[in-house]
Image (cartoon, rainbow, N blue to C red; front, side):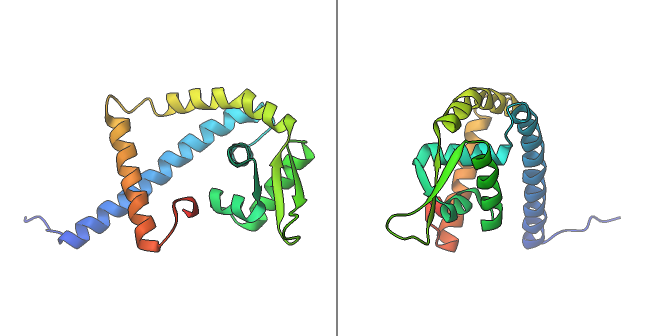
Length: 161
């Protein structure tokens, strides 16, 4: 019996779906493993992501946090609510535009971040250790190339993606 030959387009489509499926599976595994490590620190992976962005930028409008983390405004509000209750962030209205609410990391938030960031980095090393010599570099190069193409295709600035 003869093999069914796929067109170049069908083959690419099949490969693209496989890539998407693999990215999702890898993300789920990594996210679950990181979440286990944050649980005993009293924060979630998403809350750590907020702290990381606020530490990097000092302060951010709530809308910008949503863009950077690719989550909805409602998700950002919930994340900030919980972080604020823990004393890890504050929020204030912008002096220049009262409609804008700015979030800032607190000293307590800085302390929690410093406590978990080293362990976070160690966990990432373990989670990505399945890639051997040169493979992680190749993987990063491919992801960077894909990001650049997506930015070009959709007219996004690097921080918007």
